[in-house]
Length: 426
Ligand code: PSV
Ligand code: MN
Ligand code: MN
Image (cartoon, rainbow, N blue to C red; front, side):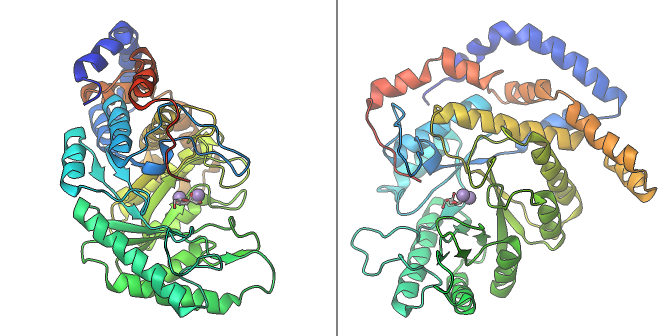
């Protein structure tokens, strides 16, 4: 392991007494409100979020990419970086691979490495939005939706390969995000495109191992700017139902048109037992892939309120595959991911503070003001000492960002990997 527990512990020492004061103050207040602080901290410790392999290097935009020094250039180095995040935060205990970017050359060695770092392989992602080296067919006009049988067959075969690769690593779900769509009116027949997609997804689903899930992601636009085949949760839900009980919708926070009520979408999907995965990020305009909680933290909290309600009240909905889907253009990716992990835990902790019983009563009495007060009281609570305590108890850092900096991790990475590595990814 790159950083030892002792190093992490030592890097947290000088702020321990301030933490203790803050924690005691908060836990006294919460106990007076009948909050079981111990149980809450346990829930925070248990909540693990997958890091996508493509988020560990600088992302860039279509205008350019500014490399971040010391980026990982192999699957091993990507795992190492997730290991750093997990050691510091104790929240990043999983990685999500993208094929063909992350095909292991030695499965046994990769699995051993992940075990040592306490990292699981979460959902595997297929890639039919780029043409692959030596591929016979092109995805320029779509993949699973293409009017050409040969292209559709190639795209289905790729997804089946991804399942095989994931299976050898212990993954249990396949995430399909399609860029398929059209950029100009009249270019596509909407009905043909959707029918072809349904047909192709069913072929993939047929080969899905019994204990696997198929997660169908939706997105309204980009890279196509007139229509996208799987444009919204309704289409994803419809396709998941058409495939069968192991198929689910996946919500990515950035994949909604402005002002969409994402919390309501979450709630409906969980009621119907069809929310299988979740991608965290934040956005101001579109699929911006910004740091979680950096733009709309209240919206994130309201979404977590529905997630917590669903987890507690919807046994028909499975455990979710949680992942951060962000892109890092100007910040150190590892620092940005630490900030995202903190924001996720913060929103989750605040949602756990909502008195669901009181809220239910206020709703039944149509006491609108009380309903709002209950939500805002939870949102306004500074829960950071709870997060700190959860981390400390699991051997993580009191302040992951400060420890990351004081342990000089980026410079260590640069020394080992050099300045000019280019990570593969989006
Ligand atoms: C493209 O929008 C995207 O960010 C989707 O959110 C996928 O989850 C990701 O790429 C990886 O395929
Ligand atoms: Mn996504
Ligand atoms: Mn996206």
